[in-house]
Length: 102
Image 1 (cartoon, rainbow, N blue to C red):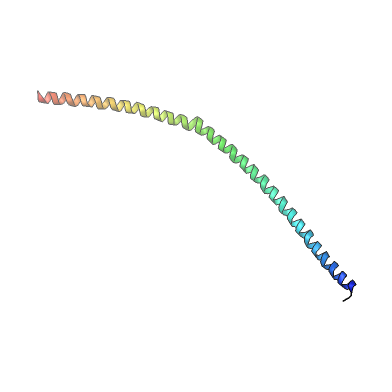
Image 2: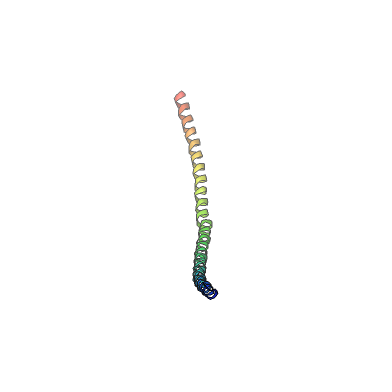
């Protein structure tokens, strides 16, 4: 094999390598574009989730906390009434025992 033939063989292999590199560059460019699209989609979804979380926090603060406070106030009132009933029942029981004893 002559030097020219060797050079031609090397050049043809280099051309194949260049084509492969060009193909890889196109693939990498496509991958980079896809990653950029995915990042944009994730950012949009994250913004939506952040908005929903803000609304949920607001709802908890404005509605749920208020309702819990109302239930707690009702519980305190019921507890007070129960204590009154227990006291009255105790008085009635004592009255009946005293009446039975006399």
